[in-house]
Image: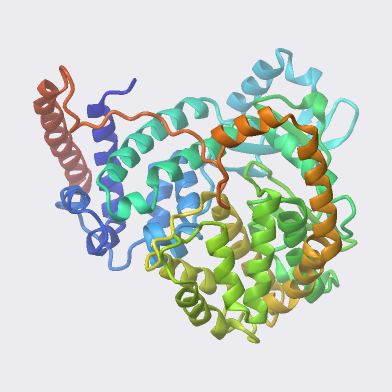
Length: 518
């Protein structure tokens, strides 16, 4: 177990980096920031030269791989980090200088326990992509098939595990301060971040996600997933079909190739809605670098390390919320929030409906170039505090992906209206899934299954698993020992922790000052 002094030392170093980029200014100015955190921020920035405008993305980039991944997660949390920081973090590029090819080749050989030339006849030493967790090389199999080979960076698992342990420690202490920090649930945010990151560190799970998504999208024309070479895939190496196409961000090249950009934009939005609402399993990293367009106009997605999943009941609520916002039925949208227990019952449904109207009404009938889904989400986050609505982590990835899709669609077709594209799809899904026939079929199936259960078993289940609201049960959080908890033998360590914090802060300040002079 890492000692508190080690966590404090890391936090001080990271704080200095954040301060040099002006990224602590917002924390100090936010009236909801606990006083203890404000004091630590002031200590961390002491003696630094801060830029006029904070650059959160650059700060996280400088800290390292775990911070890059954390920054991408925090980009979905304007309620937690503020709208300015969240918008800036959306530009965070998940890229680092490449690992030398010799180290990559050794990693491939070690993972397959065989010489590289027995698996691939050729691997291009120059990577086509170099991210914080892995890098990708073009290769040819021994059968002569062109593929892309994704390889984990050597030592990345150990480095991320170390940094995430400090995130958990800091989040537990922040949440223990109570108030707004408890409502925003930072410990749960880090728990979800840890789960997503661990998933990315096992490339077999990424390959499985690609396979599952390909299966669920098989009937959707014009959108496809590359095939996996399972014989050349393991926990540290993934081999996937090579894609020849134009990056969806290269609008001029798409125009030159004769592609219908408005049709591409519309198809991308519908592909996302099909994944999220129809399937409940969606590609949650749909940024511009992960989408290509083939010569026949097919959109191809890559990089499936981050995937989102929503259960059927939550999808029903989501569809009704989207449809209610597009049609102006704010009363129904408010009722859903109360049915799902997202908003505590002591609040007024009518007042919440009015607050929703203030957010949704300016959006209706206008193109994304004027108002956007992203702005609507910012508005929704702003009213959650007034109605004591706790963060719903299972919807954060969905919100982030929706903003990504909107941005790409707008770049392809500036006049696209997300509501006009979404509304017919959502309306059709609601009719099929929530209409009278579907409701009757669900009721018959549910009642029949209930009758098959023994009454004794039903009673035991109901006693131990009472009905819950719309938020799924969250994973257990790690037990973090708080430094101010007085337990046998703990009180005596306080002077050591204080000395470590002061000494660490002084050393970090001296090191940064010396670097500045140099």
